[in-house]
Image 1 (cartoon, rainbow, N blue to C red):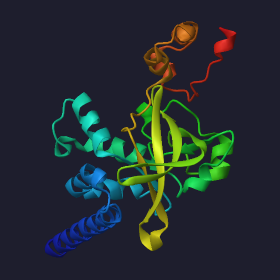
Image 2 (image 1 turned 180 degrees about the horizontal axis):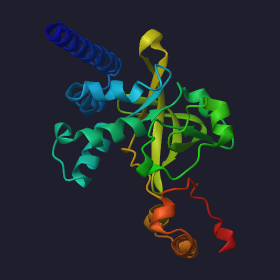
Image 3 (image 1 turned 180 degrees about the vertical axis):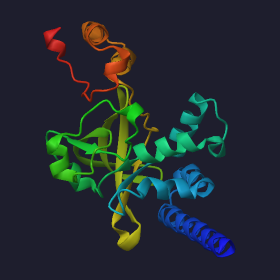
Image 4 (image 1 turned 120 degrees about the vertical axis):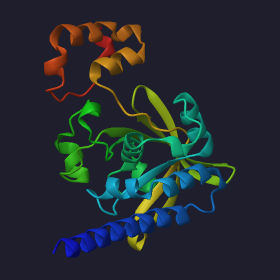
Length: 251
């Protein structure tokens, strides 16, 4: 009986590994014509199972934000790491989760005059500085409770940069981080149902509200930061879900 269980366990592990390789190879194949994305392909090859684990709660209806080689090199340098293979499991999980939008989105989906708040698959409690809210869930589903990025289309034109061409969308993420996304509208995954777009920076995950306010380094937010320190101690601050919004005009 024990031998039979061991054989089944090994078989399941091999099947899971094969599935992970299939998913990663599918995405790697979809971006094969982009020389400027070779480091991301290396990342997929080094840790195929992490992408599968990231997608397990969402399925195939996603958009992967793929950083360029220059973006990844800059991220590695800032992290004190020399190669993508040195990224540990936790770093990889955060990376893939925050670079995966919880919907398959093309350039036309960002043609919203007021911009679009898009949930990602990053749901770790330590990064929770906002509440999904009914509006986001009505757009993206009840499971759309990950950290959001804010997207706004830049005009109606397109730009080309080397092997990358498409509409430009500004993304707002993490701590005061501005990213330019090129909407190449690439397709991948089962029945090509998922999308990939290209970004010029690695998205850095958000911190708690008090840390986000401090990281902004804006004197106009000093009063807001003082209010956080007075009203929320470290214990109950972790117990509440809030969105880091403060009216600068009221300060």
